[in-house]
Length: 70
Image 1 (cartoon, rainbow, N blue to C red):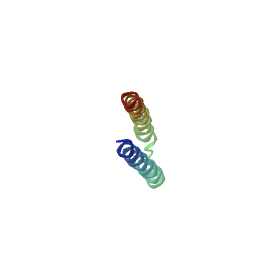
Image 2: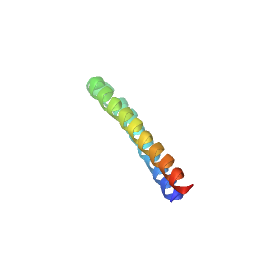
Image 3: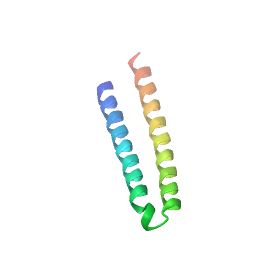
Image 4: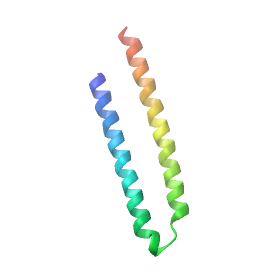
């Protein structure tokens, strides 16, 4: 059970890291073409909120799992 959660967490972090890299690349590419700043800021804000939510869910799951184990 715990290994499954761990794998899921790792997958989430990899996904978030790739998203972050994507944002950086997009920022770098579109920097010359158009000012895409506001859009990127909004998406990054949404991403950080998602990260917070996911981490909260994961921690609650982990604590619930450890409580039921004992």
